Image 1: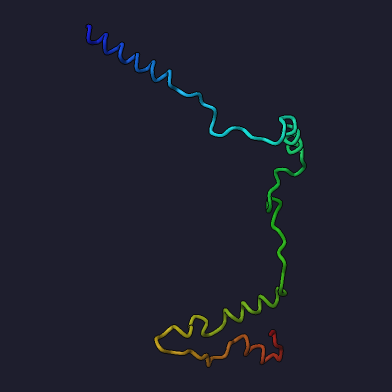
Image 2: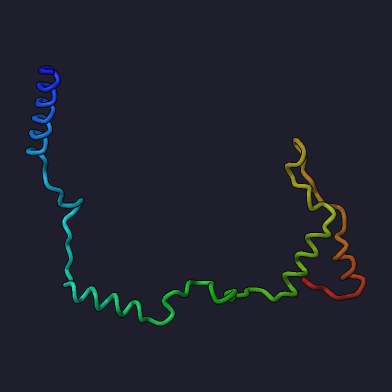
Length: 119
């Protein structure tokens, strides 16, 4: 019993020593502000009452896009590229080869037969 009392007293003395050396917590950084509390509160009230404060870009529907070419021109270019007979062949498709297209594009042939040129 004497040994357990001595050990308990020693443990309590270590806790007391550790508690006496503890520092007070003052936060990670000291608060620094150029504005007074009333100025900050006034800004918070003004921001809370502002119109459209929760509106983010794109939340009111699709945005308009600046168009550089007419829609018909872009569509004609897409159709011509889609109907190209050698659209999946490039000059690097085979070793040591150069691809020169000798096939007529069906879109160009149709434009020549009607006499209209889209490009």
